[in-house]
Length: 478
Ligand SMILES: [Fe+2]
Image (cartoon, rainbow, N blue to C red):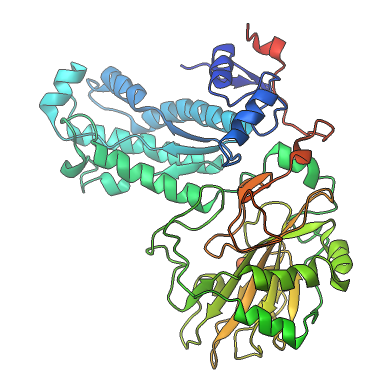
């Protein structure tokens, strides 16, 4: 029976020391997202990539299950209910440890089921020194995996399931066998690429304590009850000349798949198989000339103070994506279904129509109250609306009678001491680390280093709110 790795906020010293060596905990005892250990912070930013939450893959229980099988395989009548109870006991400890480490390190945790057993009885005997019919092994392994699935999902952990590796008898399919006992690299590749895809879609490292140190000082939230914004009135701040300049500054429209995905920006997986991809919705960059218009009007013009008040703080337009939606008669695709976004804290959204939009030409739609009828946001070219995409359910209604072009704005609220920029990187959504991220040539004002980084955000006077971690004394590093 394993000990618990973390008890009442205290981690086992040997594991704590290992995590310090791995750079996941600073010398101050705080996790990498909250530490003020200068060496660790400098190490993070020396890469130029910025910071994101650590990822841990738990693969636990296979040896336990095999050893347990050794103790019961001779019993004439195996009581599966008793087996299940035993597994529940052990799995609850595994899940507690996985959750403990997740919370302790602010990590993303994946839990992998144990691989289905192989059919080869001879190899099984050779390795384990006992005989156990494949049918019993399959049933016991599946019992363990079912118990693990239930406990992990109740604990809010991400599961990697094994049913695709299984034949009809619950045994490992021959194509995934390595030596008659173990699974092969193809099995590992498939599982890891699934983890990678989930990781790519859900990267919002900004839920770290360091980021929270400043956004929590602002009157913002990510739920409808507390957000300062929900949805704004419609603004029409642009002149016809400014709209014309923006339209002349549009790049070419392409599907969302990013062939060279950057690590410092959130984006969809670089595969066109992803269900959100469709040739009917394409994206383009806005060049620095068009971004200058947005900068002058939204980050410096009369609207700037209004927006600042509505958003709860100073802000930059960290991403500007031109979205072209082709008229179509069938059902909605991806963002054309009602949904909430998973924006990181401090990210708000804006929409500027570049075509006239009525009920039939792709209006933005939102649900103001949980049971209310959707409201359509119609408007002439140049109409601007701001909204909190985490707080109001919304969708882009599929355009029926004409194509729609709109600008999708990703707005990052930041302390006033940071410089304000307007930037475009159309294949991505938001930066992974709000302290440092790469910029393209499509940026106004231009930034020669091609990097957003403001050391003031790391200043020691920032108030850090951290999950309870150990002091160096408690961890006995020396
Ligand atoms: Fe959305």
